[in-house]
Length: 273
DNA sequence: GATAATGTTGGTCG
DNA sequence: ACGACCAACATTAT
Image (tube, rainbow, N blue to C red; front, side, top):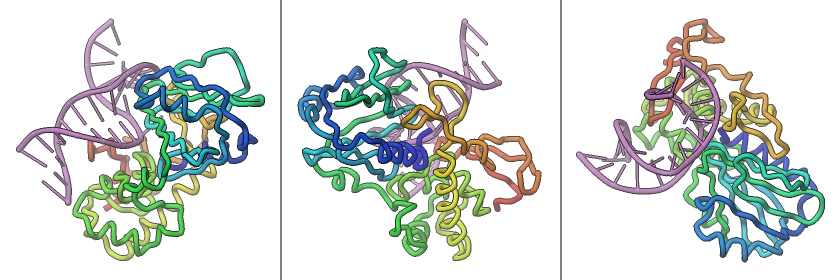
């Protein structure tokens, strides 16, 4: 669920909240796999203030007054919520950051794949990540170099966070459709014009998805919710993702589904050569 | 009610 | 370097 646009939506919620400068008075962790050393974690961040929030790839970065950074990765079903103080425990609640003031932060995660990490250097921790697609550094030249140096299938390469950070299954498929390129093409076979189209498609698809508040599929526990518990609207704008068998919105040929890198891959056999 | 599939990542093994 | 496969885990769709 949470790919770059969903994570960005949550980060913007935090930036617009009035939480920065408020102190963390208590930390409750109820999922052993969330953190390697929860004792140490609780000791270290209790009493700290949250000073800022940013995103790198699919990571949420919460900066703290101690100078350390709390990194949150939502993986498949994680939700980082800003909620009014309440004694109730949420379904699948795995952690709570109790704050001064009227709100608390709660982390919900049905599948328990989500991770917290506390680090002195977010830069060092995240150095394995590739290009940041909505940053100035995501130039056509840098992107082209990454593509042309690999023989891997395009879909697999786009999902590789060490190449481009933030694309997941939905937006990789949607970007390839927008660029009219087949997902199984070897990356190094792309022509200049195709590189340019794909580069633009990635930026446009991600930007549009952020404007719609991310994608929320289905109604269950796996569904994406922003920091205030609201769904996104971008799922209504899919051209290929989970549209197997339905007519292509450009040419009416049925959308096909194949598997690449053990992931469902959706494309139009007519539009994407 | 059993079975397959699910938006992520990190590992092994050939 | 790369793809195939598996593991973490719970819920939902078929």
